[in-house]
Amino acid sequence: MVRGARQPQQPRSRLAPRLTGTVEKPPRKRKSRTEFALKEIMSSGGAEDDIPQGERKTVTDFCYLLDKSKQLFNGLRDLPQYGQKQWQSYFGRTFDVYTKLWKFQQQHRQVLDNRYGLKRWQIGEIASKIGQLYYHYYLRTSETSYLNEAFSFYSAIRQRSYYSQVNKEDRPELVVKKLRYYARFIVVCLLLNKMDVVKDLVKELSDEIEDYTHRFNTEDQVEWNLVLQEVAAFIEADPVMVLNDDNTIVITSNRLAETGAPLLEQGMIVGQLSLADALIIGNCNNQVKFSELTVDMFRMLQALEREPMNLASQMNKPGMQESADKPTRRENPHKYLLYKPTFSQLYTFLAASFKELPANSVLLIYLSATGVFPTGRSDSEGPYDFGGVLTNSNRDIINGDAIHKRNQSHKEMHCLHPGDLYPFTRKPLFIIVDSSNSVAYKNFTNLFGQPLVCLLSPTAYPKALQACVEAYGKSVKNIFEKSTVTLPSY
Image (cartoon, rainbow, N blue to C red; front, side, top):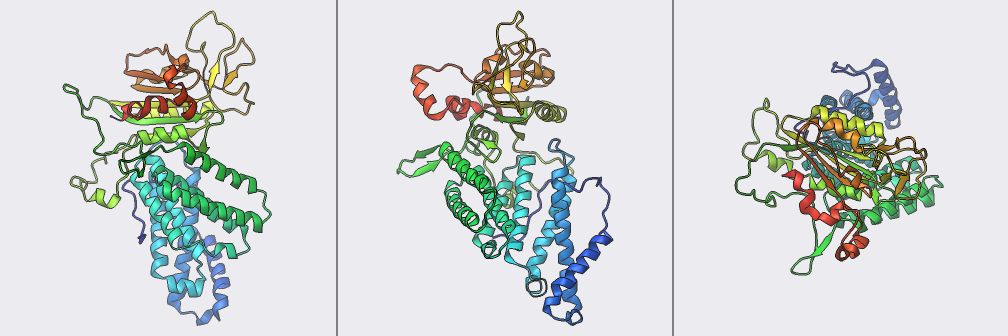
């Protein structure tokens, strides 16, 4: 049951633009607008003077918390997407306000129903925002336990039918809130491999979209139908389902279970290097995706994670009640998920990861992208002469899977060449290239003597595997299977 939001151990924060650690006081103008709204709200319940002072204060406090929560939540988008420290204090403030708001509406539900006219969809919206906070905290920290917390709030919205009355109101923007809630809930369920719930949600979302487009002649009908097509294709592509010994369907997980870690070979030394950061990049043409998560990105991010744990049981484990002064050990490597980034975006995130990489740690770069091939022969064989993988641009795609530069005297600008990664080999680097032009990285030079591994997808396949490739695609994840791509996790 969802009784109250538990604040993450490392609160994350995104505050309004220009807020740099200052203590913010309630703005007077905002308070006056709140008072004006209160008069409008309470006028329907009788004369304003007839309302007890305690109930008036309850509504005033709720309006302030609601207004404040919206300010803070909207400020999240202004925080930089890279960097592991800047966002924490702002997220903490945002989470604190939503925790207070959630508990406040629970404790004063009757007064808010009578005096404020609190509707169930408004409660659902608060719960949805808390679910979004947990989900984005997972994206920031890679702690899979927060996916369970997001699922808890999203599931409560569905079970308690918070959005059930939205369809009765002639307000299309409220229906869109409901549709977006379904889309976010589906993403969380996909990441938790709750495929039975996903299928139920897709059916409900389909019905909601049909009703929405029938009642309102909106321009976003095509977009919502595309959402349905994407999630249907995603479900068909992944995850892999196998039959158990008793012929029951089992959905396999790419995550590492506590009992699933391979034993170390005799004589192996533990603790010299550990995987601390990863960039997972997806930029393939016409690849199955949902939201901004391709199938390849989905599989790889799970391969770099441990199975989610319940936060309450995790905190009760021995050793978890340590002093707050000691840094909390992060179970999973930090990850950036970049869907079709431009070269500048990719380089910005890469530089941020490189800068914050701890000592004795490895940075992993996973490139699932369309190949960029050189045109003609070059007199030299340098790190910019064999092409590379595609980065995003506004240009038209040429020849499907291959991009050719238009001027043979210049290198392809919207391409990540092997030489572009050379500066980052000053620290331990693990590169996985899943591309039709992975051979461009075959002669990757180790200039600085740091540990360096390049894992390249094949460009030709044995005849015995050709049928498998045609059936399941050319992804290195499918060819090398789970054991190889989870290698960096150990």
